[in-house]
Image (cartoon, rainbow, N blue to C red):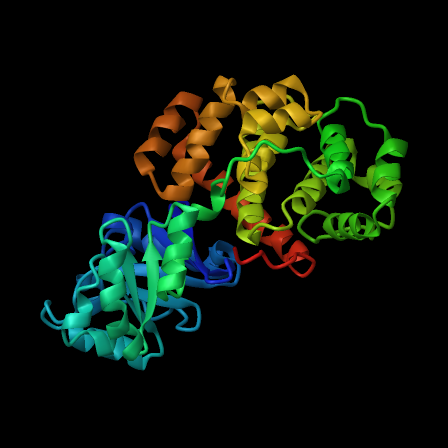
Amino acid sequence: MFAFIARQPILDRDKDVFAYELLFRDGKGGTFPEPPSEKARDLIEQFNPLGLDDLSAEKKSFISFSAETLVSRFPTNLNPEQVVVELGENPYKETGLREACEHIKQLGFKLALDDPMMLSGNHEALPLVDIVKVDISKIRLEQAHKRISQFTDANVQLVANNVNDYEVFKDCRDLGFDFFQGYFFASPTARIARQIPASKMSLVELMGESSSEKFDLNRINGIIERDAALSYLLLKFINNPTVNKRYKITSLKHALTYMGEVEIKKFIALLSLTHLGSDKPLELIHMSLVRAKFFDLLSQHRKRQTNPPIGFLVGLFSLLDALLDRDMLDIVKQLPLTDTVNDALLGKSSEFNHYLTLVRAFESALWMNVIKQSKALDIDQKLLHSLYNQAIVWGNSVRATISSHYPRPQLN
């Protein structure tokens, strides 16, 4: 059995990932599944071998537990350095829950209270918790402004949840929220019709080469050699142990000998995207990486075209509108991509529309949509979860490769 888990990023004020919230398909409302069911026991066994680091890229994990689990069945094998225990209700309202929470705190865990309306500042539970999550879609910012001092005075950090608009992120940050959950960073901040800067045209050329059926090694070499940073990072990508465990690659020609042109096309596309979105949060690149690998695995399973690697490219470029703050239609007019890739990015491909709906379902834990797409694509649900888990692990690994070379996003 595979671990049916989704994750959602929680970003800090600098738009860096602070943690991921893990949402469990077999738990009510996304909570950690309650024993003693067979599903829960199997999941616990599968969960630890998979590793929190694999799921959360060495960041903290927010995990929600039911009151019953916290009181009598809390999995003490979890690491308090990695896990933030999330409460869905006031610990003073359930018999034994306060004592259980106090014990969990003594074990070293931090407690986060899901308090959509910021009501916990008015009762005695506040000193027990370290973090409070606020549903910013259910409370007016004026209300939040009036209540926020109660939490800051108690040294409680605040997460603004359901932040799906960049202006809302800035307003919440200005109010004093510490963390932000929602996909505001994956949406264009402003749609301005402008040309891609001349300084990035070499990246555009690489994107075009990656989608071409032909492979012009000399042309690609010429593009990359114009930029020392591109050359260095390409070799770093290719020598990542997740990708290449056997050989030390020293040049693009050397890489072609051992890896083949399809894999090289994937990595020059990845290289171009990384630099093209260098002023955006790294998590946006990370989402693109996971989508690329997931679409690639789906395409292989469905026996779709693999040279050029259309699935990989469509997944990788599916967030270009957010990376460039422009409409996708305007973007594809400037990029020398194939018609197949362009049509998929513009929503004109039935096949890739299924992929996009599916990956969004995983990103948002919309499990009924996963079931629907499983039927539409005729792929077993367990296999879909397995492929998505593989994509997460791959994306984490590549992210680790690029993170030290990735500039911090601008705080605008």
